[in-house]
Length: 129
Image (cartoon, rainbow, N blue to C red; front, side, top):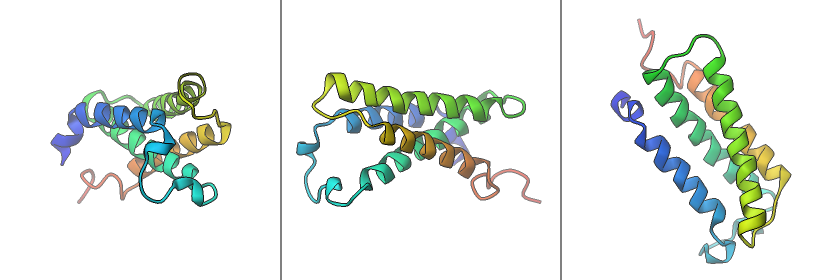
């Protein structure tokens, strides 16, 4: 599993998956609509960005370990900025709307993914004596 996280490709592919999902017209998503459940889209945003943060943090912590909190804060900033940037992309390049609450859900998801990676349960390969 460590080899999977040592590769940049899962992180890049997931970043592209997020982009595609967030620019996809909501009408083209078949099945039960996420919009039928109030604020369910916030949960989806948080999960997407939690995986984003987990993958990128895993890659960079294995390949380019940084000291202290700098990697944590860098990924938190990038994930939050990417989420907010995608809201502007939705506003200006799709028929979807800008939502500051979606951007906040992206930032919270990024934080959740980072905390999962930093927790003893998200870091099972290290310090197992």
